[in-house]
Amino acid sequence: MDTRFNLFDNEIAMRFAKRFANAALVIMQSPLPKSTQELVSLRASQINGCGHCIDMHTKEAAAAGESAVRLHLVAAWRESTVFTEAEQAALALAEEGTRLADAHRGVSDETWAQVRKHYDDDQIAALVSLVALINAANRLAVIVHQRGGSYEPGMHAAILS
Image (cartoon, rainbow, N blue to C red; front, side, top):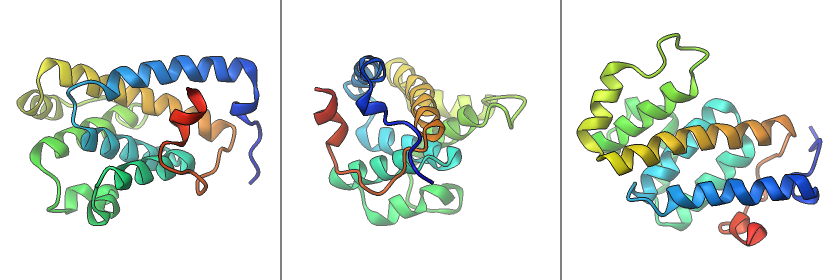
């Protein structure tokens, strides 16, 4: 499968990408732990089948010191012992927020209660925004067949600066 359209070679797409990156910067600078941000982005990207974003978030997390064991177990986080209760709450929110079309009830009250237990309002704002943003990024990349494998940590920051 070849890339259908290079979003980085189009003026309109690049203007949009810079604004998209500004939204991402708000989340990156929030008090939501960076490791949680990468785990949530990775899990949503796995669900959406976005090779580019899986590649990016796996490599960014590893570059930031995330262990290979935890990265390998994100897809099976419920059957793992390596994630904190707070991370489990964030991963559950990511899954339920990503699978809106699959889960008629959306984010469950149980998941929301766990998120409220572990995160303050600013972290929740960042977490909800992150789930929405990564799902949008996944859709952009999947639509144009932007493939994974060639991403290097820091690559998008360099492109968009």
